[in-house]
Each structure stands twice: as C-alpha cells, then as structure tokens.
Image (cartoon, rainbow, N blue to C red; front, side, top):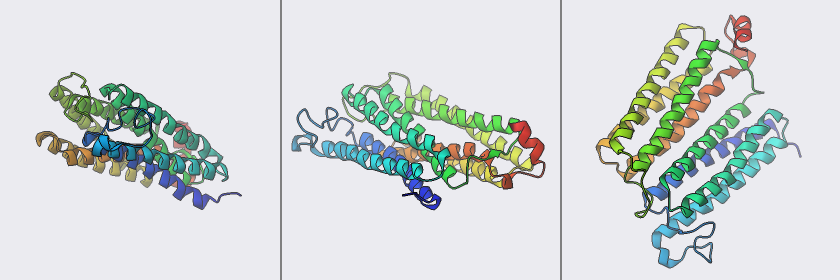
Length: 302
C-alpha cells in the first residue's frame, strides 16, 4: 500500500530523534562507569544475553542500552519501508544509509567492548553516531519539501557553509580525544589516550572559537545580501547552539567535569551536528525561496 508524503515526515522525524537519544543513553552508560557492565559481546555474559545479578547495576545499565538498539533498528526499518512505499525516490539513499549505519554501529560497539573500551574506538563509535544523526536530520528535513531543490546561494557563501561543516566535524573529533584523555573512561579498567588533557582541551576550545567566528561571519554575509530566510534561520540556530555548548563546555571544564554537565554537553553535540546538517540542507531549496537575482545566481552556483 502506498504511503502518503504526509506520513513520511513524522516517521523520519522519529528516526532522527531515536538516533539522537541513542547518543545520550550511550553517554549515560559511559558516565556511570557501565561501559563494561556486560563484559563481552554480542552476549552480555559468555552464555547469556541477559545480565546476571553478579554484574550488578552496571550490567543492567549496559544491557538495557543494548536493547534500545532494537528499538532504533525497528524505527529505521519502518523509515525505510515508509520511504520506499512513497513517491519520494530522492529520499531512498538517505533512508538506506541511515538503516545500514545501525548494524555498523552495533559491530563497532561490540569491538569496542571486546577491546576493553579502547579510547580511540570509543571515539570512533561516537563519531559514527554523529554521522548517523546528520544523515537522519537531513532525511527528515528533506522529507518536508517536494525534493532536493536548487542552489540558493552564491558559491563563496556555499564554500563558507561547507567550511563551517568541516570545522564542526573537527570540533567533534577533537572533543572525542578530550574525552578519551580525561577521567570518564566508561570503566575503571579502561585505558586512556595518554595525551595531555589540558593540551587537547585547549585545541578543542580554539576550534570552537573558530567555529563561532565562521558562523558569525556567515550571518553577517547573509545579512548583507539578499539571502533566503531559510539559510539565515539555519545559521542563526547553529550559532545559538554553539554559544550554549561553549558555555556548558567551559563550565564543565572548570568544575572538574561533573557527570550531569558532561551528559548535557553530549546532548549539545547532537544538537550542533543536527544544526550543521540543517545549514547544509538549507543551501538548496524550492524556486520560491530564490532571491530576486536568482536566475543568474542559481546558474553560477551550479
């Protein structure tokens, strides 16, 4: 039975939310020291998928987080089915990519457990989650419009937006190194990167300042030109999230990384990823969004 376009959008939204929530719950596992609550994978223990009383609360937390993956898989399957039964053929690659990312994430998570929470694999696990959040966000945003759309900005502004996305990725990457060098390893037995936490934290902060500066420059450039409101709103929202995330980051650093603030900071990373994906998505849109000099501008952007 065909699925209407009006149903595809809420389904893809649920998929995006589920991907974001999975990052936060995964962070809660690590921050409670439950990363090795189930000492093996794919089973929780050598002979069972269920946690045993001997594993205590850490085993319960880790195993229930694994079970949430089943929910994520179901939501992804429903998303793929809804997209493929709709007329939106342009959404199919994103839907498939969003689905395939889940087993890849599960396998990487399994290897992470089997290697005793190697900090570099933990970082890769988180970064893959960010990729899936960006894909799911783009899928949802695109589902709300008739199609991919056409270029809305001149090439220099497109390049600036692309630079913002690249620096956002660098901020997230170095942020994982900061975490891998700090105290929140996920388990008392887990190793650390061996890097100086203060040094990598300074690098992370420098990249955050660069990101905020580029986003401010983007907003100024958009205000000085006849740019579509969708791009302005996306850039404005990204700046707000960046500033809030920066404040949380500095507070958590100078208060010795309290668990609650670290978890909020992880949720902020999800929002920054989604906001950056929204900015890139906003660069193309319906012809009705084109400014007055659109014909020449769109042709130049192609």
